[in-house]
Image (tube, rainbow, N blue to C red; front, side, top):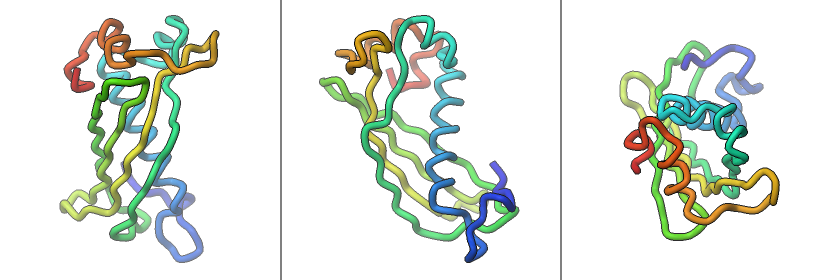
Length: 132
């Protein structure tokens, strides 16, 4: 991704809220690549929800900087799982680290489903991309 001018704050660096948007975009792109686009999840009656997030800002990003955003899934035993993101400039400089606790919401019952990894694995075309 390239940092765009309208994403900058008054100090001239990337606005703090945009880091979270970059991470969310990367998650959706990974889900899509695994064969789980949003419309497929909705058709199955489920959707990912973010329950908690933490961002550690390490180096500023300026307009025109190009970055990559990594996504790692960490699956547990319960109803939640964790994402880990690194936002890096193309020269390798680590600009931010983000961890997020997430779950999969049953869109009818409005409750987290049990065993979210198993459910996504069964639906995905490429569950390996999700660490499953």
